[in-house]
Length: 337
Image: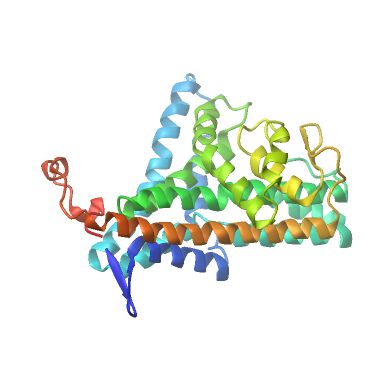
């Protein structure tokens, strides 16, 4: 399905991405009391307890909750799309917007970095919005390191992963694309709340998140190297990508460390680019700019690829026989977009 924008016929998924990225760039996050991700977090919190069979319970939770979250965001987009392609694109874009967090990430990262010189005590409070580590005894360089690490890691979690999932789903339809972005965000949220070694119920969620984030983490590393105008940062970073416990977070963090020429360190856990010094304020703020540019590149790539894929698939007009058998509409499948 397309939407007429002046002389252009814009695919509905492409317009939805534009809406989502524009909202993320200019609008504040919805209040936590009504934010869909925050509401989903409250649902997850109800399952954060001990179980007699934590493995089974964890598998059910990992399978069911992200699917329910995906359904909660995809259904309104599907209903709106049934009314008019423009309505579907707007509602779908708003749904995708709540799965993104680049603007908030950049603002909080910049705030922490600037506070490390002006008011380190306040910086220790502010960084709690970005990292889960104990910040009480962190020095100013360690605070800047934590902020830069979070910027790199959350580029993958908070932007590249949902956009990549949306792109894959857009090959089917706008509602499926919205559902894919929401599902990835749901998996991510489960891992952030339950994926600790001290919580057996979260083991399946953690492994699922590892699998889902494999490609976005590496794509984010590539985007960071391109944004820094330092393609060689990626091969230089390979030496440290496996240093963190996560199989994925080391890729964007190590690449940004290499591009900035700084040491990033979580005390007692890992050190990236160990031969360099911790970031000074100017280097850390350059990291913010690199992440912002990498996020912009990810957004532009998603817009271009959703448009291109719609053109490639525009020849598909017939509902597959299996879909007809199961009475699935061409609208749901995205056929004839």
